Image (cartoon, rainbow, N blue to C red; front, top):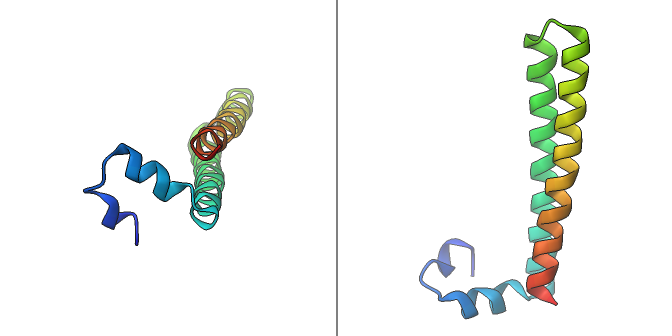
Length: 83
């Protein structure tokens, strides 16, 4: 069953569907890869379009920390569902 197939499930059915070890590991991998991809994309945009070097470096640092924070929160929330 895929994510599309659970669109008619209620909350409890979705939670039990996510609790499968293979599925929650895939969810964690998805969040880690997605936030890493977003961080790299935003970094490239900032490097290309922000000419002030100090501002650019600060914005890249903020994006990096936000990416790590959101990744940690997403993983934490998936683990809270599972355990």
